[in-house]
Image (cartoon, rainbow, N blue to C red; front, side):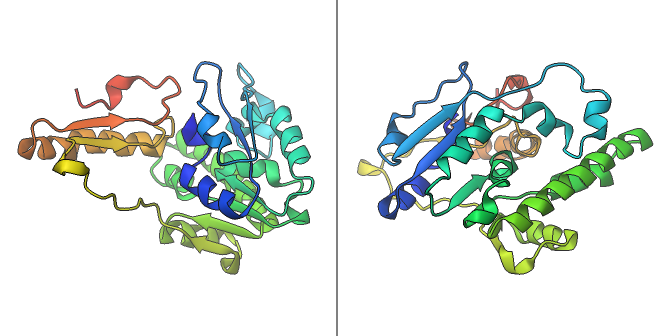
Amino acid sequence: SLARLGRTRQMRRLGSNHRVTLLAFATPAHPPDVEPLRTLCERVHVIEPTRVQGRLGFRGLLSPLPRHYVQTTSPAMQRAVDEALTGQDAAIGLAIAAARYLASAASARPGMFEEAEVSVFRDRVVFARDARSRARHTLTWWKYRRLVKALASQCAMTTVVSEREHQALVAMGCDAERLAVVPNGVEMLEAMPGGTRVRRLIYPGSVAYDANLDAVRHFVVEIFPLIRLAHPDMQFTVTGTTDGRPRGGYTPE
C-alpha cells in the first residue's frame, strides 16, 4: 500500500535536496500506484513480502526474534537494501518492519530508526487475561524489547511519536541522547474554493495494526455517533490497509 511505500511529503522534502531511493513491500493483491513516487524519488523498488506458512513450533519459541518477524523476514528485501546502501549517505527505516533490514549496515553510515514503538507490547503483558496469555506475551515482549534496543543502538537516531514511548525506550536502556520525539500530525489545510465543506472524516492508518484497529473501533462506537447527532450527513472513511481484516469490526454502518 502507499501507506507502506512512503509518505509523499517526506519524500518531497528529502527529494528537494537529496537523491532518494525508496524500497518498500507491496502485495500483488494490492498493487500500489508508484508513478507519483517516481517523480519524487530517483528509484522506487517494490518487493513482494515473504511469509512462512504454518506453525513454527519450537523454531518460533527458541528464536530470539518475535514469531512475526521470523515468519516475515525477506531475503529479497535484505539483498535489495544491502545493494541500495552502496554509495548512499544515510538510510531511514520506517518502523521496525523496515529498520531491521538496516542492522547489517547501519554502523557504516548514519541510519534512522523511525517510529519505534514498544508500549503496545508491554501493555499486553500488563493486561493479559490469564497466566498462559501473560507468559506468551511476556516472551514476545522480551524478544521485541531486545530487538528494538539492538536497532536503536545501531542507528544514529531513533524517533518515537510520544513522550510515553520515549520514556519506555529510556527505561529499556536506550540512549536518551539518540532518541527524538516527533509527534504525529498534519498540516492545516486551507478552505476549499467557494466555501465548499465536505462532510467526511478520513482515517489513513492501517487497521491491520491492532492499536490502529482499536482506535478506529473506539471512534466508531463512542465518538462518531455524537458527531452524527450534530451532522447527520457526516461520513467516516478508513483508507489504510486492511490485510484481510473483516470490515464489520469498524465501519460506521
